[in-house]
Length: 199
Image (cartoon, rainbow, N blue to C red):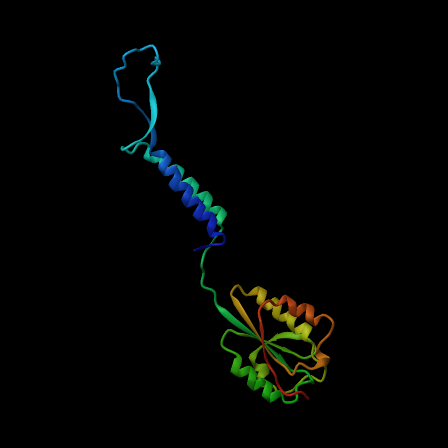
């Protein structure tokens, strides 16, 4: 477990130590002393702060310390460490911009692992089955990087773990449009680009 703001929990620990110290600072009766005159002595019993050597009200002390530590932990915002799986999304360009579809399919096979997602895009981006790698027919239309990135972003948001994105494409200028840069900015992590020959 980690804290987003660990200083808040450290401050709570310091306050708990102070509360514990103040708990043992009690007001005890002073020892009786003989005075030559009694007109300046108050009628009530004289009390003064002193350190107590005996532990009293331990349940009350425990409650105070627990409340301080729980408040500090709540402010510090704990984050539980959970194991997350990592998948890779592979975007495979199958548009007319690819000179050799077999080369692109071979690149995709070397990158893909079990459980990874394949987004093969021609005119539009679609999550594809690995059987698309056996079909070496490329799309006669131009590819759209924007559409493929949108599909990859949706797939990444549906996955709770860490996601890496690999792009197998010649990155032809015809595949870019006005929205491509804005959509690319939504993907915070780096994108691994595996270039292939341009048709």
